[in-house]
Amino acid sequence: MHFFEPRILNLNSVDGKAVGEFPILYYLTALLYKIFGEHEFFLRLINLSIITTGLLFLYKLLIKLLDDIAYALIFTFLFFSSAILIYYTNNYLPDPAALGFTLIAWYFYYEFLVKRNKTKAFIISLIFFTLASLIKVSYGLNPAAALLSLIIIKVIGNQKYSIKKNYPYLLSFLFSFLIIIGWYLFIIKYNETNNGNYFLTHYQPIWSLKKVQIDEVWNYMYYYWLPNYYYESTLHVFGWMIIIGLIFIKTSNKIILTIATSTFIGSSIYFVLFFLQFKEHDYYFLALIPGIIFLVINAFISIRNRFPIIFGNLIFKLALLLLLILSLNYANKKVSGRYSIKNDKFANIGTQLDNANEYIINIGISKDSKLIVVQDYTPNGSLYFLNRTGWTISDTAAIELIRIHTYIQKGASYLVLTDKNYLKNSTIRSLAKNVVGEYNGAVFYSLNK
Image (cartoon, rainbow, N blue to C red; front, side):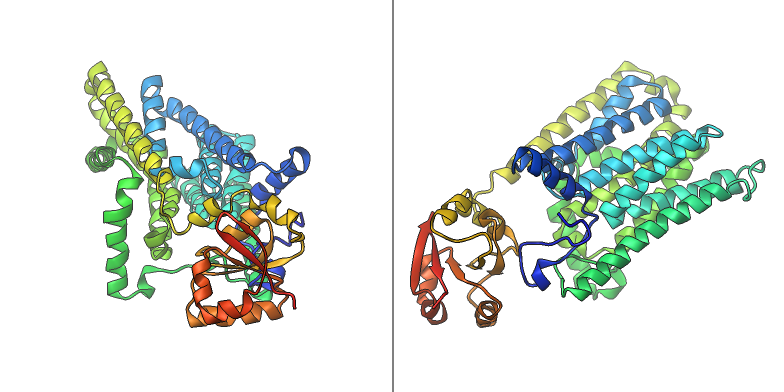
């Protein structure tokens, strides 16, 4: 539990030292492990609690903006009805927690913008903005958007507020950005020092790609990931609402319009900077949700102010409620589909080695033993279920097999074959001589002479 010396189980870096996000969530989980024992649901519970709190504050913000409980509830759950968001809320990635902290931050920041001398709300918002950005750098677009909104609303748009009067707020933002930048400079140096390349610590912008790569990303997003972002009809409603809202932009809430514009700019910059990641990683979409929320709500306010009779009608509310029900049902099917996948080459290793830790203790594989696992497509999956450090081999290609001898020189004492068919390979067969145990089709060999 060394906070500033985070590690992973894979030993490709020096002693497994590698870091990406600010490890506060994992540190809290480790503390709970110390008190109550190791139970995976603790990290799930932390993520779920944070995103639930974030949605509660989103609802409170919408109550203030829409002055209608029905609309506030419908839109809160509509924004939540992304299959990707629901799936990762019940998982281990830090992105939902970062989103939850961001939603809390925006509530208090709006409180600060609409009320004079609301220093407490500003401080709370900045704390959550900073925490979200430390956990996931992509959410740094939100404090940047908040700063831009402050400049537009209180420095440029309000003659009563001179820039001198806003120095404390501007300096506070500077302090926040320095903390965020400082952390990411630390992790870049930490990973470089320890030869850690597991975590992405640089951006991959659209202009660095060839046209064929750009087209490939777009195709993945449109044909593969788009159905998981939101229910198709929900996307259509959001899209048309934003377009129509632009027509009646004069009737918008000026503060929300400013925030919507700022988050849109920030989201656009984030999208082009991390464009390549949208091909393989659906959860990168989650950082765009705050921008979507403000664009849609700003448009809804603009249209409702222009046509109050229509939007005050019960029929319109029922229509949106029906859309919400369909959207949640669609998301439920998508999430259930993800959990029902039986042949997932990344997840199969977990099914095979689940609860294997107790077994390998009984056959004498000690806690400090280093393992080589063949075959595992993930860097840490099998090692996690075995609760040991070591290395994983993704296939039996020549370049992968060469690494086995390197790992043995680095102290590997056991070889784990997830399938006996790998014994057909002469290199594997020459090493797999001393069987010490077998668990659910996985065979454990001692590499000690």
